[in-house]
Structures are given as C-alpha cells and as structure tokens.
Length: 139
Image (cartoon, rainbow, N blue to C red; front, top):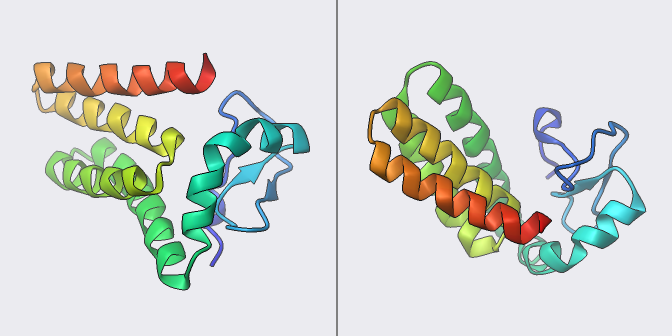
C-alpha cells in the first residue's frame, strides 16, 4: 500500500525538488535523488525493515502517517482535543518504528496544539524535544 500523494515529500527536509522516487522496499519513504536516499539510509534502515516486515506493519505505519496529517488539519480547525489525541497516537507508532523525522514533527505539532490550548509549559517541553531531534538529524 503506497502513501497518499498529498503526504509524499522528500525525506530530506531541506530539499525542494518535486520529482520523487519511492523506497522500493517499504514504499513509505520518498526521495528526490539517490544522494538524499543514501544520506537518509542510516536513519531509515530500521524503520524500512519494520514497515516491510508484514502487510499489518505497513498498514499500521500508513495509518499513523494519515492520522498525523489529519491531526495537523484538525488543529487548524480548532479541534484541539481531537488533534492532540491523534498526534499522541501517531507519535507512539512513530516511536515504535524509530522514524525520527515524524517523531520530531509530532512533538512540534503537539507543541503547537498545546500552545493554542494555553498549556505553555507542556508546549515548551514538546518544542524542545522536537528541536533536539531536529538538531540530531540535521546537525
């Protein structure tokens, strides 16, 4: 099962290219070039193996990605409690799959939701976690 087109971006967050190729093993990671794929492989390897281990795992991962995107939109519609729950559920799955990019993005989105709910201290904790992971990924 491939990911929906609207959530396909190069796993190298710094890229702006739009002609992407899919990881042929897991079909869940997209890259604009062979170089980006090779740069990301160290981080993607464990996740890729888990996603491709069974149809159930692939479906679990795909659902987490879809729920993450829905939650990001719910936050914009002031559905903060729904967004927070969806993001936390997605985060648990991304932690299981060790997908650093989505983990970082979930922490950041959770921080945004908590900030909108005026839970500033909790938001700050999530922002720091996202930033720490982002720095680890991008140096």
